[in-house]
Length: 275
Image (cartoon, rainbow, N blue to C red; front, side, top):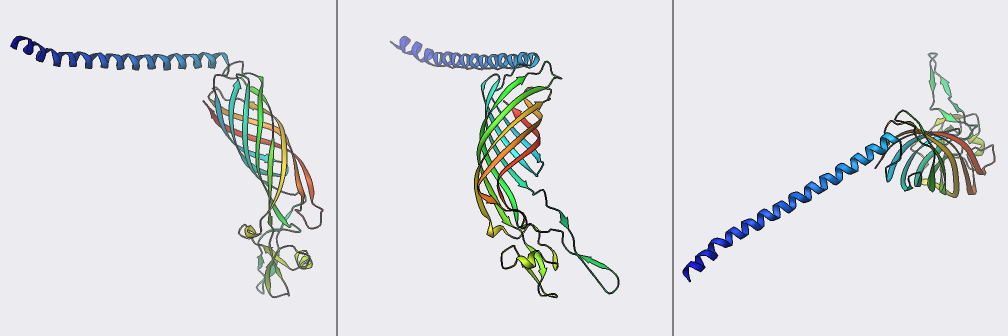
């Protein structure tokens, strides 16, 4: 009986050691399997890279946009539905200018012959016009890269909502001459706003408390040319057209009637990553 008990006591630690070693072997095999799977996935991506075939699942892209009537920035998230088709979620913030806007400066002469210049201003401007846009669209591959030095061409179309943000434009005027006050365009102050006693603009600080919203919709169509050497990065130029319609007229200039429909062309410089 003592011999059996002695044997059991000796075998118990040995069994624990064997179980521990067996568990370590299983963990090691699991790590090896994961490394092999990762290596195979990387090799597959490299093969697609060499062949120019898309092998990614999603992308994120930042862009700087230059319209013929302003400028802005964009952010895009894309999810692949097939090797040659992706669903896009896009956001933009733009600053739009009226084609008749022209900056001017005023000055007053001092007795010593020096001229004091006022802050630059845009004569007749009544509102700054910003756009906050969101859209859902599609990206279709038209031409793939033939090699690492090639260019991929995509067709893009998207549409969604657009919030027009109207910030009143303030200027400093002398009214009566010798006294300066800050005004925006109103029927009561229209004569002073468009008069000859303008001192200058007030800068970016004024008008935010009077911000008005003009809701609308928009659509776009574009071509994107991506020349980045590797498929996991984006370096591209995009050329396209925007179509925007607002439910209320957008007034930008005092002497020109506002409008609901805006059509403009644009070019964007894009940078991003694919995964």
